[in-house]
Length: 296
Image 1 (cartoon, helix red, strand yellow):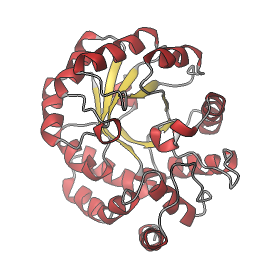
Image 2 (image 1 turned 90 degrees about the vertical axis):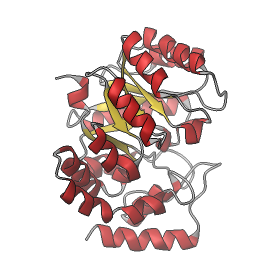
Image 3 (image 1 turned 180 degrees about the horizontal axis):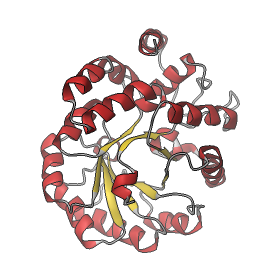
């Protein structure tokens, strides 16, 4: 089975639950993994930026990866996030992290440095040369400060053998359609925007790597499944019920919003690492009301 087939549908960028003292809460992480798999997600992404990876040590990251492999136990594919703006450090991580049970590596485009398009291309080319697993690009200019153009994505897809796909979160539908038109047929293109997943799948994307699927996996995965089947009437009805939730989850910060929802479900404690803090009391109440309504 090709990577494009294995990672079709709903992926979830897992949160990292913490104890009140700031340590990683592994029992809670186990509950989250069971929750999303039983809810119907097709694969999980560990150490995505939703997992607050900038605040995790290398030792914690490796332990989380190993725990995730053990807990998932082959039920769904696992993708590991390894991204950042220090190319040399990422090369080292790709060579030393436990990636044997991963199907791919998700790597966010360099943040803060704001490299040129050529710099982005050379960054990913260097990572692909050493990665033991196929690399999925991750374009999220709202976080990184630099958009990776469709032309750069397509160039990477065509010229660099180990670049296998992209999580596209620019929010630019014209850019997405250009990419879908020009990329090789075996190049995996998935949405990185929960709120745009339906129209982007309608344009040809193969699914989404979701934040909302942490808290409401069944409702979200059903929407994605309807979309991939071309049943857009049912997909729209499912998506309409989630639109308010998308807005709430991202109103103040991600993953503060989704952690608030998951705390309401009793999956995790509502703990984050600075500089991220829990959502405001007013937003918490709105998330609680929506979550209660959504899981009925």
